[in-house]
Length: 373
Image (tube, rainbow, N blue to C red; front, side):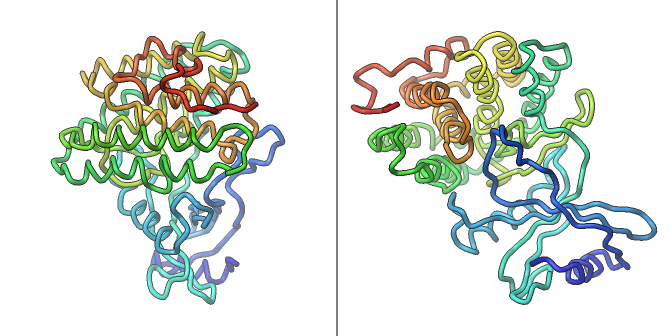
C-alpha cells in the first residue's frame, strides 16, 4: 500500500526540498459500461504536491505481472528502467522524472533493496487522440483540423525516423522481439483464451509460422534501424490544442524498425472504420491515406511497404484481442483475423487495396478451421 508519509519522504529526497502532499488519486476514470479498451498494465496515480509555494503534479506508474512478458520482477524492472532512460530522448515525449522502487516495508527509494519498481512522470494536460476517432465514428464526418492532425502525426514520424543508427545486430534483435517478445506477436497469441470459440488453435500456429518466415525475410535489413517511439497509437498521443500534442509511453527501446510506428497508428484508422462501416471508407479512409501517403512522400521509404506486413499482423492481434478489446463486435473481429493472415501472405502491403485483406483467405493459405462463430 502506498503511504503518504513514505511518498513525501521520497519526493523530499528526490527534489532536495520540503514537500507537502496535497492529494493522491487515480489519473482517470475509465469504468463506463461501453468502454472499449478494457485492459491496462497498471493504474497510474496522480500526485499533487506543494513545493516552494507552487502546486506541482506528477504521475506514478507501476506494472502488473499479468502476462505479456511481465511475469518476473526483473521483467517489470527492465521495462521501467528502459522507459526512464528513453522517454527524455524523444521529441514531444513527456518527461520521466525518476525511476525508483518500493521496498518490502512500503518505503520508496531511488534504488536499493527493491521489491517492485515504479516510474515517476511529469503530468501534462491533453486529450487522447482516440477521442477524435470516436467522435468521427459517431458523426461520420471530419473537419480540416482532423485531416491536419493525421498529417501532423505522420510528420512527427517523418521527423523522428530520420535519425538512423548503424547497429545491424540491434536491428536483428528488434525483429526477433517482434516475433518472440511477450508484448509482441507470440505474447499476444499466448494471451488469447485457449478454449475461445472464435478461432481454432491451428490458426495461431499458422500465424506464428508465417511470422517466423517474415523474420528471416527482413532481419538483415539493419540499415533501416531508426529512432522510434515503439507504441505510437491513439491512446499514447495527447493533443493539447490544434496540432500541438504530447506523446506517452515510449516502449521497448530507442531504436527499431520504422514500420512499428507506421502500422501502430495507421491500423487504428482501419480499426475504427471497420467498427463503423465494416470496411475502410469515408472519413477514415481519408485519414488513413493522408497519414500513409504523407509519410511515404516525405521519407521516400517505399520499402516500408515490403517490411510492414508482420507489424500489421502484430497490431491486428492487439485490436482483435478479447482481453484488450472485450466489447468488439464478432463481425469486426472476424475481419481482423482475415486481415492478419492475408497481410502475412502478401509480398507488399497495398495501401489502396486494404479492403481486400478483410475477405476470407483462399483455401491454399487459410487454416482448416479458422472461424467458428
